[in-house]
Image (cartoon, rainbow, N blue to C red):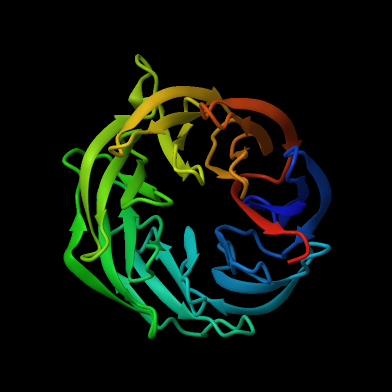
Length: 338
């Protein structure tokens, strides 16, 4: 089995494209996919037939049909924005595209038709606070969360109506760390009511209990992503991922240039297990769908590095390096033949 792997390069006007062998994790380079504008965040329908891309340089949202066999993309629709979003998320119904806006401090919802058409105007634009960085819904598709880095230093909490796409503030509308951690991205545990945020400014990960009925969070641990003695001021964190079996969590350090590994305990608490060198400035990394491999891109190097994951320990073993475009920031998998 193989997967198409797309690398969104914010400093280039194309996706780098690879075929990944699911058994070995090896990548076979394919021709670049020209987009005409520089891409940012990406989200894909679960069946892999459509892809939605933030063309941040052009301040547009665009949808594409995906040729599952060849991996080529065909533009379906686009709509203009006042600001390019750093994060996109397609809700579980597939009818709504959620987005966050770093500079203006707001979140948006666009309608999405079955044919990939994106509503010309957002269904909602809701002011939150500056540096809104990411947005996702929970497994029930009833609640949404939006981390904000400093100075806002909060995770906003929303109720989400999957029939209308409407977001409404939850009670309370946000939670704030006790110290200026600056939440950036987050990941839900695959089987338990836990949410983990990676905190850009504090170089930490925060563990939260998630109340699935109320849709609210409560923090119970904050742990550093850095080794003892490394100056926190020389680092910011970027991305966070959890293995499909829920045993291990990874966070990326920009400055220390590493992936930090944590074991997830029975009580949800994290234990640091090591750090693994990456390309310069690992703004984004992603786990293969199988959970057996990690792919990390260096914003500073324009290269991708892959690793195998030890299923028993979570430890990483380097595999390959590949050149990609300038300033890569997103990695997307689509199963070949979808």
